[in-house]
Structures are given as C-alpha cells and as structure tokens.
Image 1 (tube, one colour):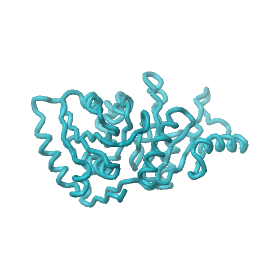
Image 2: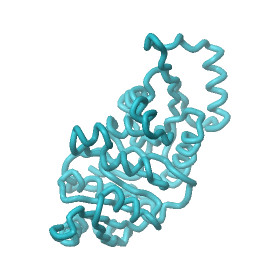
Image 3: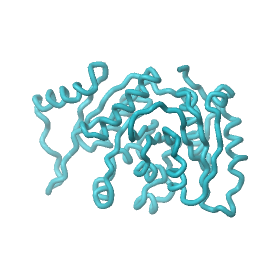
Image 4: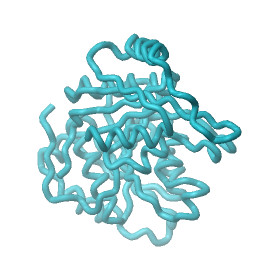
Length: 280
C-alpha cells in the first residue's frame, strides 16, 4: 500500500552545510505533512594507518556535541548520536525505529575522493527500504514534481508514490519518458496513460498530470527536464553491476548533478492496487 505523507522523518545530521540543508528541507516537509522528526548524528571512523576505529567519545564530548545539535534543531526532536560507518548506522537505526522517510544532505565529492570514500547519501539510497529525500538547494514550496519513468514493472511504484506526494503537497505531476533510441521508442504516452488510469480519481484531479518525452541520454534528459520543477522522484533500482560500480545508477548520477531535491523510492515491484493518500 502506498501511503503519503510520512508521519515519522529521520534526518541525518553532521553539522556541515549539507546537513543544515537537509534539516531545513525536513522541517518544511514535516510542517506541511504534520510529521514528527528525529535526528541522527554519526561520528565516523577515521581512516588511519591501521584502519582501526578511534577511541570512544567521553561523556563531556557527548554533552557538548548534543548541545551543539540541540541549538540548531530545538527541543522537540530526539537526538541519537552513534559512532561508526555513517550509512550503516543510519540504515540500522532506520530499520530499528521504522521511520517513513529519511532525509539526507550530500557533500559534492567527485573524482578520486568519491571513488575512495563514496557518498553517504548514495549508500543510504542503495540500502534503504523506505523513501529517501536527498536535499538540495534552497527550501521552496513544492509546486511541481518530475517523475521520470521507464517501461518496467518496478517503475510503477515510484510513479504512484510521486503521484501521492504531488496530491498531498498540492503540486502538479509531470511524467517524463526519456528514450535513448529516437527511431524505436514504442508509445510512451499510451503506457503512461495506462498508469494514470490506475491512480485514484481524486489523485488524478489533484495532480493535473502532464506527459513529457525526451530523447538522448537518460541522465542528461532528466537533468534538462528538471527546469520548472521542485522535486525529482526516481526509483532506486540497479541495472548493471559493472556499470553501476563505476558510474553509479541513474538515480545516483542524477542526484550528483541535480540542483533540486531528489526523492528516492525503493523498488518493491509493481504498483499495488490499493493506494491511500493521507489527508492534508
């Protein structure tokens, strides 16, 4: 069953500019959806000559760190401080506490640093069983959502989730199909129209969907089409082990270059026939 909006949001926080951005986006979404928020701060293990974790934080260290975080996030949310690999710890806590959405920022590592250290945001996206919002840019009202789709069963759930989000946030929905073969591309409008017919009538009326087509590279097509939209919603789905190892999935490559938030929806198969959109 597809349920939006989230009622419990976990925000990954590390006192850097990227996590400030994540916090601001999470606050705006929580206010719109009436959601509760908790914060997790992970002290990462340092890379050293013997690859051992650092010594534990003292009680005084923890008090000072908690006070620093509390000064930003206020008194209403629970703060959890952990130590270890940030992505593993965030995912482990999310599985334990069962949040509906994880919000993370992303540090724009590129080249060798990305290859060696990876990206916490990308690792969370790959391992999460719940949607992940990768926050980018200034907070602004969500008036238009871009939902890239492809002819695959797993894509149906992501599209339906995008439609549910658009309905709750009073946003318009654009279904985008990008083909790398301009000669043979099938009939994307027919396929998208079938998807639209599976959505509840009240959702269709609320989101006023439009269909857009583009040709060329999938990632570049999505990024070119994001103008005028406030979120991109994509399914977290691997394609090729070799390609993904070196380049990343389509979603990962989009979120590295996108100037607007990207909402990752885990691939869970085809769209369920039951869909519930919570009242605003």
